[in-house]
Length: 141
View 1 (cartoon, rainbow, N blue to C red):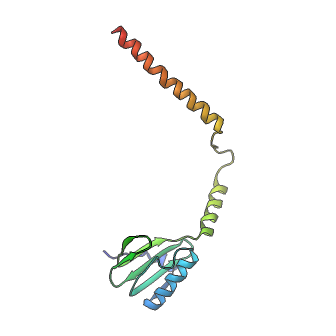
View 2: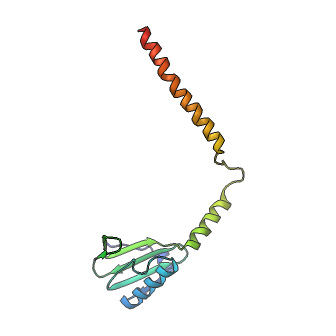
View 3: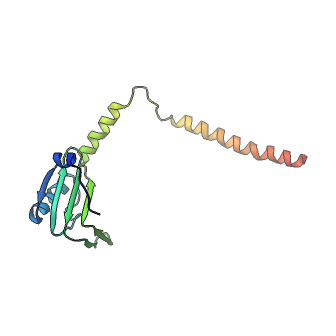
């Protein structure tokens, strides 16, 4: 089943057609997102699209490509249509900052290590008491 890119996504995208343009833009996108340049060994690219705002990428090629990554020792198959979300380290850092800014002040904070130790100790005490109580009940029966 062919991948359908919604019109609103296509409207925001940079779209390139043809193998030469697709290969060039794929290499640029990989470099921008700090991914290995050989990650997408695609052939006969028909269409390549990239939405910079979201990092959504799609590639359409004439036929499936099977590739062996010798350094990783892995065989990989790329379908005729490939899509992904690609983010650079800078974009990820920016997202984290935005998420942190959106958190309400006074939000729950991770407990201090001493509190975690205290809770762990109480759990151990509770677990050691339970078998004793069970043995006492068993002795009565």
